[in-house]
Image (tube, helix red, strand yellow):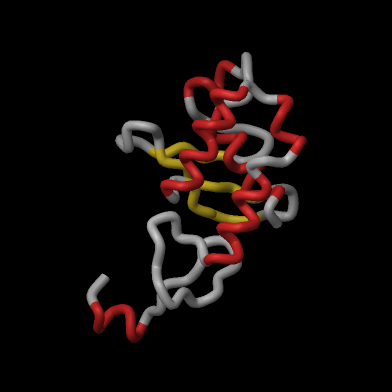
Length: 120
């Protein structure tokens, strides 16, 4: 985005939609980033495998979780894959990644979405 573009279309926080003075790589404002960091340490996430929680936190820090739409039942997010080659549609209840489709364990994309929703 060029400087002329940013004057007409300000960059907004992906979570609360406030205008950001200084855009960040994760797309969050300072207050929302603090809430998300606090939520990643929530006791609700201790039920998941620790290495998956770490990967979910990494996804959030990289800005790989982008809100797509919100319905009455749930919010849908677009989550970038680890190698960056594809995107997965993820909600709290389901994810269309290979691990999410097998559903043996909770995938890191869903854990990231749960952490993001806990920050609300």
